[in-house]
Length: 156
Ligand SMILES: [Cu+2]
Image 1 (spheres, helix red, strand yellow):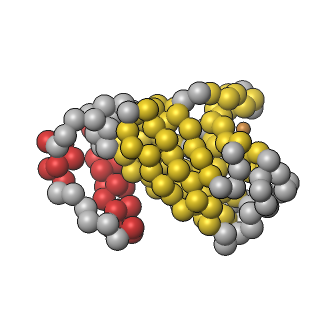
Image 2 (cartoon, rainbow, N blue to C red):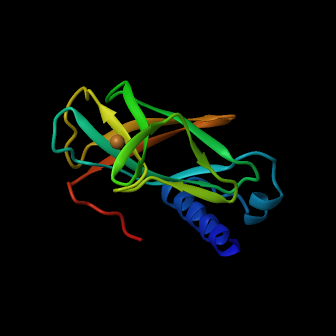
């Protein structure tokens, strides 16, 4: 468990560096204010095969001391975005997903994912889709999600 936590902190620091934001001193992550401390990384949408349906993937890291609940995702691309888990090759809609304290929530191909329906237009590779992630008891996080070619898999 400790090793996973350390990995999450490193990933968070890396995402701050990539985003050009100032990174909080590492000690702050452990001794700072109570509550979830969230960061989103690795977001992408595979270019959809169909014009009206797409999936979305990302990782949310939580270096805080409190679990967070992802409750919804909004976007100009569609008002119909739902959270899905996958078990036994069947998708199931869920009302929220937990980002555990000191851990992460990973949405990935074949697993938990965003389902986007009734798209305003068909996104193509190279596009960026603005999304906002909404949490219970934590501030929303805006993400510019790149559209990747079908079959794309994130490294690592
Ligand atoms: Cu689904």
